Image (cartoon, rainbow, N blue to C red; front, side, top):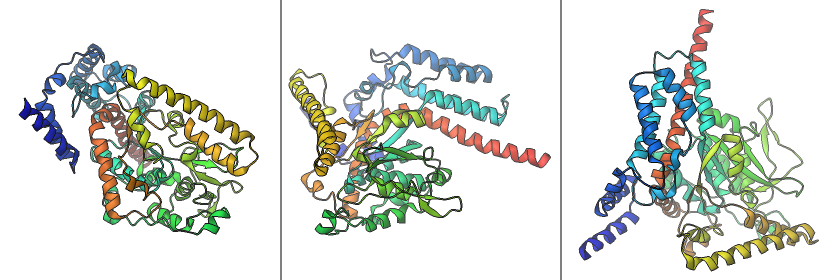
Length: 489
C-alpha cells in the first residue's frame, strides 16, 4: 500500500510537469488505471445523470442510421437534440477520473456526430443543398454553441495563447471567441488568421511583443497616459492587419467579439463584432479595449468607409479598456450567438487569487463563515462605490469608485474557468514587455490548465463543432449548385 501511494505521488508529480498533451494523457491514464477508475467509466449507472435517456437516444439514432432512414433520422435529430441531455455535462462526472468520463456519454456524443455527418453527406437525401443548409442551421440555433472568453491581464495575457493552443490541437477551439483588454488582442489574432496560420503564434520565439514604453509622469498627469500608445498600436496593427470585423469573419469563419467601455457616463459598454459593427477595423477595437484608464489615453475607433478608406467610427466618442465594465460578456454572447457553454481564460491579476476559493469544495461547513463575510463585503462595497460614483463631485473619486463598482458587480467565471498560478514575480511583470521565456512559461501554464478540462469541454462542444462543419460544407455545396444552375441557364 505504501509503495502504491508513493507511485501515485510520483505520477502526479510527472503529470504536473508534462510538456505536451500526449505526455499528460499517457500519465493521466496510468493514474486512472492505478486508482481503478476505469471500472467507473465502464459502468453507466450514476445518480448524477439520466443514463437511461442517453442510452435510449443513442440506440434509436444508431438504428435509424443503420437502416438509412433519412427522414426518421432527420426528425429525431431536429426534435430530440438538446444541449446537456440528461445532465451529462455535470462537472461532477468529470472529476472522478483524470481522463474522460462515463463511456456511455462519450458513445452518445460520438453517435450524434456520426448521425449528423451521415445525414449531411448522404447522396440519397431528398433535400436540396439549400434545404439541408436551413435544416442544419435550425438545429444549431436550437442546440447552441460554446464560446471562448479571454479576460484582461496585460502581459499576463500570454496565458491565453496556451489555452488556445490546447483547444486548437484537439479541434475544440470554439467558432465564437471574445476578448477584453489583453484578451482582445488574442481574440483579434484568432479572427484574422486561419487554422493553417495559427501554429506560427504558438512559438514564443516568433512573437516580438513590445507594447510597453514609458511616456513620463507629466504625460500621465495631463491625462495622456503614462505609457506611449503608439507602441501598443504598432504591435497590435503588425499582427492584426487592416481587416474589418466582417472581412475577418469571411477569412477565418470565426466570430470575434471585443468589449470596450465608454469614457462618457451617459453611454454603456459595447460588444464590437461582425454583427454590431461589421465595418469596424479590428485593430482599433483591440486598441480601445486595451486602453487602461490612466495607463493609456482613450481611443477613437476606426472603420472602413464605402470606398475602403479609413474613417472615424462615431467621431465624437472615445473608448477605453473593455474589462473595466464588461470583462466577460457572457449574457450578450448568449443573445448574439446562441452561446450555451462558456470557456473562460481568466488572467486578471486582481481576480485570479480569489478563483481558487471559488473552485474549492463548496460543501465544507467550515468555509461558511468566510463565504458569508465575503458576500457581505461585496454587497456593502458595491453600495458604497455606487453611491460615490453617482454623487461625489471629485472626478478622480468618481472614476475610481466607478471602476471599483464595475469590478465588484461583474461575473469573472464561466462554465469552465481556466486560470494561471501567479507568483509575486508575475505581478512585477504585468506592465513590462514579455520575454520569450516569460511567454513560454505562461503558455505552458495555459496548456496545463486546459488539459484536465478537455473531456468536459469535448462533451459540450463536439456536437456544435460537427454542426458548424456540416454548415460550412453545405454552404460550399449551395454555391456550387447555384453556379451549375447559372451555367445551365
